[in-house]
Image (cartoon, rainbow, N blue to C red; front, side):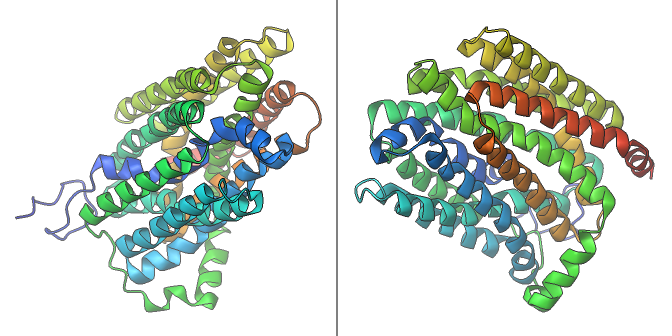
Length: 411
């Protein structure tokens, strides 16, 4: 017999079980683990295919591009067919892409690796978009803030641990082992989805019509509050993905650190992110949203400034890279978890809101990666300068739109 409905649920069907935190964590991190786990292999891939650093980073850029575009696909599918069938489809596509990435090694085809990474990303994008949707399906706004913060622990634990795992795999096994690991992870995600109860009816037959899709997205893309929160969230995500793509070049190639040791160092910022999410969840019941947002932005700024000063003053060691970034990562969840809930709960069409937020979120990371690849100079100097610029942009946007955001929080 199913347990009684959770008292803070939006669903009024007694046979719908509360989504498990483990399932939400695996789903929300499904795309990010695919992006992060193989990054310690980038220097090895450069040698194996005899390509440049910028060419090798296409494996990250194309993945993020597909990850971004894929966010817009799954809202119509979730409304038409339900959350679970949509998750089954996306995860299966990602699984196939992972297998072909692994085959690119023995076939010695960098082109196959790029195509397979794109396919993998289009499938992996289902996790991020539908996680926020499932949370908004089931929970009321106040409790959703807390659940979102705990769920976002995945961005600390899973990607950080995955980079450590990737470092160990690349040190002792061929780089293709990273993608075999991701294939197994996809099977685990499918099992968790099998145990998940459907939280959406999936009966909107017109939802997948192209004209309806365009009409609804055009309407919701005009929502200024959704756009502002989403851009702030996306800017913080750009920090994470730009660092994931550039740190291996700085620490492994330039500082001569082994991939497995690099993976262990990467647990430092992962710990900061973990603690930031834990604190954000605790603060959700005690402080106003705008107060937590201010604290998050302040901590992010301190981390960025310390990293900039240390690197440009010549203090370039793994610790002078990872410690300031851990402070930056501690501040991100304080802003992210609150902004994500405010964004999705301010739009009536929650599937569309979730997809648009995720699209802008990952799209910002794509822009960040393209910028880090196109700006000339040493990777470390470019990284710290770009981080400084992103933070100034966030502060400028927040101050410019502060009154609108404050009015929205009070309604």
